[in-house]
Amino acid sequence: MNTEKTKKDRINELRNKIYYAETARDNYKEKHAILYETNSLYVDVLKQELSGLECMEVA
Image 1: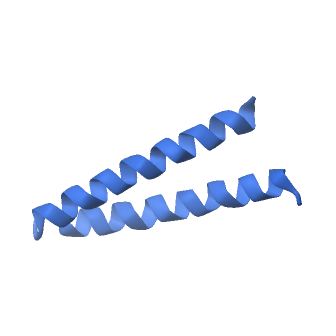
Image 2: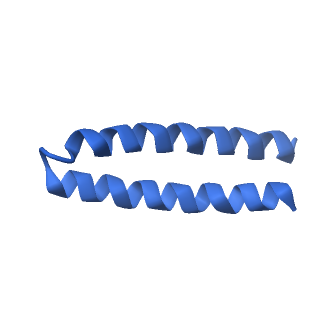
């Protein structure tokens, strides 16, 4: 199994999830505070995971 390819695929997947979660979050900003907050937390977790993977990739 190619771990480098798997890691790059996961990084791309996380970037896509972050994009769509941020879009959803922005749509809820004025309409639904709880969903806005939930999506904000989800985006933060995704960004932390992405940051960890990118740090491992550089090392």
